[in-house]
Image (cartoon, rainbow, N blue to C red; front, top):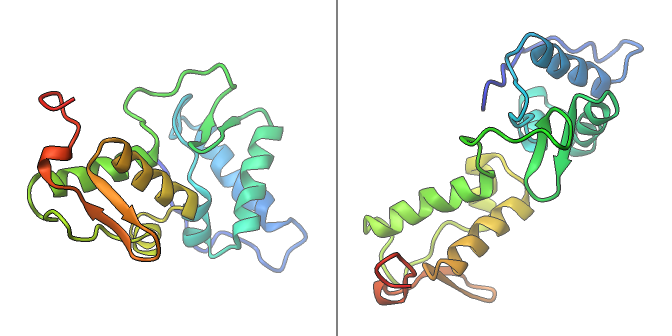
Length: 171
């Protein structure tokens, strides 16, 4: 994801250096080598958790360590990015929840998911995109704001009829 290079079997799980510090050092090295540039997203907690087989709390400490080293900053609900808080994010890097929503919107608009049929649920989105629950919820909320889906409590989110979609033709 975004220049993230997974390096398997590099963690010393029996040594004196905490795992979060080892993973933070690996990401830090990628930043210093220019593989991750200012404004690029740092791998998400879910990505670190999956690739390094670490706990979510350990992944969270990686982001904190990078922030403490002055290598990254976090935007609540959007992720952690390389650089200082005033560093502009790369234009190509829209928040992941928007990318997820965009992919689902394309499937809806192409008729792949027809009106009154369910879109993938939170758990499916979390698995498919390796994201946290809050990110999956943001993606669905974004689709609701666009008028593409409606949510039925305890049932899921379903595609709205096309006449309800908010498009440039139908504001």
